[in-house]
Length: 327
Ligand SMILES: [Zn+2]
Image (cartoon, rainbow, N blue to C red; front, top):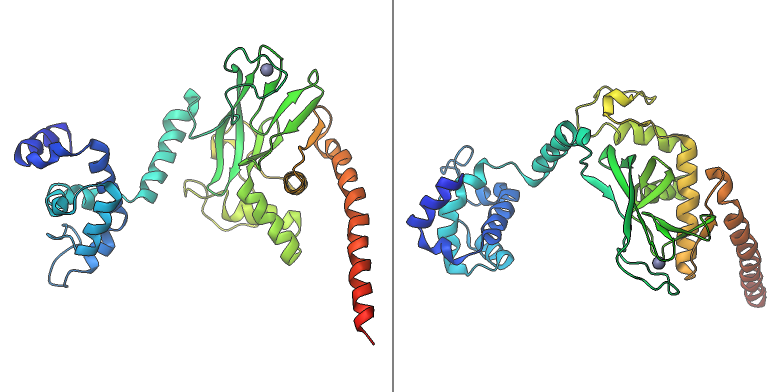
């Protein structure tokens, strides 16, 4: 459907002028997603492979009308207008794949990425800051993100408060003369591994479950990720292999697209600390400099010292209750 078709349709079906463009777009988008359902209610004598069925069933019409806030009596008229587009449009999943490809081929070299990692606030949330305005943009950095949709190129934004000199990053804020960084009080969507690598938190949760439930090693998590997820998108080598061999050229990223065992362990530790601090309503603070594997040692030691006596105390209480019941 192009603009001329829309104008022609508006003349032919004046009812279309009653609705907003976003209602009609949503109607088409939703119907595209379950067009197989729409076809399935028609008898086999009605051809639906290459052409849309003439009628919309009551249940589908009701769903589409409620979802788009279009009165039910107009459902069949809208279906008459939009059915050819519904049948020719790719599904949402195929559209996403196409859009990902466009970002990679046309956007990445221009610095346009589908994934952009921003701090969650645009104003300084330091209580002792006069907060003279919105945060300023400090810089953008190109990064590689490991996601359930594969290895992606992304950009991360750093913001800066000119009043109190605190820097706000995607995961945390940097303060005390750039000596400390404190994580925000929510579990972030992305976990920072180093300056140019981030991992999707859902992925780290999956590794944590695998480690805890089935004692999966970090190296096995790496192999599983590189085999199953890193190649998603089908434009990489689809052959089965057991060792990761993605190159920067394969993925179109400037930094290493290979996940490492150290990154899996670091992500496991950071997520465990974040969950624990979040549960106890504490903010996680670590030194802003030094090696990644060393920076979290202090926080780990502190939690271990607290957790061990607490666990022993609960175990003794449990045993005491058991012994009382034993005779
Ligand atoms: Zn400030």
